[in-house]
Structures are given as structure tokens and as C-alpha cells.
Length: 504
Image 1 (spheres, rainbow, N blue to C red):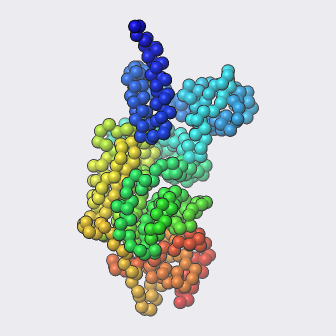
Image 2 (cartoon, rainbow, N blue to C red):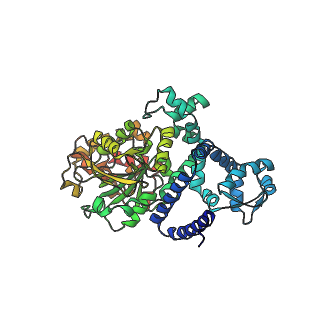
């Protein structure tokens, strides 16, 4: 019996792969396993010379794709129900036909587009996905920001004597100063360019919306829900730097029967631009480089925040959070990459370099997380991890919490004050609203009450106590969960309420 030829066996493997691919699409773990096998097979088949040449030419793809996006060709092809000719694309975009043909060649080879006939193009699942707002915005943001910083990263590292990048000014600031004659950090650059800020915001929001929530992978009951008590006014979770509120909203919906408030915090500009959010989620403008105003919450939750910052900046954020936490009750939850000590998967490894180039940030190993949190006064309860190519959850408490305390306790009732104390506190309140920190970091949720009961709670909480006892009642300053309370309070209304307080 004649053995099949190698070409026949390759064809048989291809047929088998087609069947496996269809089956693996129904099981995410199986899909990842098959993808890993396929990538390792490619790596073993590709010669060293082919690998080097591929990497040498890799900057071509984002450059070409950015041009096709900016001229509008990508969007036009995806929107069209039929393949488009180069003549049609030239008419729509105003670009030369020959230029379009040359730009499309590598993109066709990489399956961004399908060439149905000579100089005629149709979309594929890749180009269709790229037009989604979060991918389109993210690609343009990274092309404009990360690509330039990465191009000059070797020069920056040589200039610093190849020291570890752990503070600003870093590679991004170096590029801006030397090559664009501007002294701006990445966030300052984004603020100065509204369209690019919109791209970045779409990218961040989309990334959050299309990933699993932490409580879908790890036991929320065990981590924070046990021992929360029955107080509807207690603070269950504060989503710090939570963007447009996807995580906070999803958490509130998933645990709608659990007592306690859910608060979303981000910069005032971000909070004010939120178009839609569950009314049960309280909005609060807050800069996490300022002291945390919400005291004694059950959980302070950060998703992909700390990898954006150097160790020095992370310590500031952690210390501000620790100052608001209540021993034996509050927990710190950090949803971040926890890199293995060896064989780091490609995606988080690439992300780490992008963070270095853009923000002087980094992805961290378990040992690095332990060192950072220990320096800020925290002890780690557990690293919750699944696979190396998936983010994990870091659960931490303040140092010295006993095992009994970690079960959770109910927040204490706010301290009641006599009339003399209230008069003194009103004076403090007036000074507080005139404080520069208050002006710089607007906390919209601190003064939204419009009836006597709400104002009473605000008066008891807003004047920050100088002792631990006096600060226990500060959660009363957070608005209750109703539609009016989730609206940001106009400045005129705030002024009117303050005047009422003075008259009292």
C-alpha cells in the first residue's frame, strides 16, 4: 500500500483543523489551546531569517492601516454591501488610485480585506471588527501615541544609561520635548486634543465592556459580600477610576438584592460626560491623587489602574485609599495582570512595553505586587488567578487585620453633635468649600440633598473630623440611590444650599 505524500497529509491536517476550529469556537478554553498549538507550529516552521524579516517590516502594518483609516477607505469598504473598486474608493476619499492599491496590498495579505477582483475590495471579519468604536478609537490612539514613543524608546533608554523606567519624565515626555517641542505627559496631551481624548475614552470603555467581570471568575460572596450587614446606606463598593461605569453598573445589577450603595468615581470631566448609567449607581467626581472622601466602604475596587503608574505614584494612590479604609471591614480589590516569573504570554508582555513607553507604567509580577502593597501598609489576603493570559484579582486589607476582622463588620452609626458643635462645623464647612483642593477635585456627590433629611446627613458628615471617631460618619455624605441623587448638582444650587446652612 502506497503511503500518502506529504502534500496529501498536509491537506488532511488542514481538513482536520477546519473541523477543530469550528468546534473550538464553542469552547473558549479549547479555542485558546488550539490557537497556542497553531502558533507554536508556525514558530517551529518559520525559519529564523523569516522571523527576523517579518519583525523588521512589522511597523509597516500600523502605519498603512492608520492611513487607510484617516482617508476613510476602511469605513467605506465596511459600510458597503458590495465590493468596492479602487475608482470608487478614490472618488470617496480623494486619494490617488495607485496609492490606494499600494496601501491595500499588505492589508489584503493580512486578511483585513478580501480582493474579490483586480483592484476590487470587500471587508472581512477583521476590518468589520476594527470599525467598532473602541477598536477604531484605540487603534488611532495607540498609533498616534504609543507608536511614536516606541520609535524613540531606544534613544531614551540610551540617554538614561539603560536605567529602569519608573518615573516621569519618561519615553513619552522625551519624545514630545525633543521631537515636537512640547512638554506634555500623555494625559496632558490627550486633554489638549479632544478628538484623541475621545478615541482614548472609547478604547478604555470598550475594553471594560468586552471583558469578563471579576465576580464571574472569582467568588464575590467570599471576597466582599459576607458580613456586609443589612444597612442600605452603607457603602458596599467604590469603583475608583471606573470610567463610564460599566463595572459599577454590572456589579449593581448582578447583586441588586445586596444592601449597600455602589459609587462610581472618576475625574469630574469623565463623570460629567456619562450619557447613561443605572440610577442606583452614585456618580462622584474624584482624583485618586487626593485623599479618598468615602470612608469605611466595604470594598475599594480598582480595575487596570495601577499598571498605568510608577511605583511612586501607586504608593500615593494606595496611601490615599488606606486612609479611608476601616480596619476589619474594608478591603482593597485590584483587578490587574499578575505576571508569572517566567514564560510571560505575549499580550501582557507587549502591554508592559506599551505602558513603559506611554506612561512610565508597568505590569507586575506577584513578588512586585507584594512589595508595593507592603510598602503602602497592606497585607495580601489572596492572589486570585486563573491562567497566565488572563488578568487576576488581588485582595488585600490593612496590615494588622485579624482573621475575624476580615469577615467584615457593619459600619458604625454617625456621631451626633450638639448645637455648639454644629455652629463650629458650619464655619469649617464654609472654609472647606473655599479650599483649593475642593475646587480642583469636584466631589459632586457631597452636596446633593434637597430636603431637610438629606441636608442633615450632609451636615453631620462633611466637616472632616480631626479624630478617628469623628470621621466614622462620613459615609452619610454620599447621596441615596434615586434618580435625582445621581444628577450632578449645578453650582447655583450648591451655592443656594450653602447659604441655607449659614442661615441655620
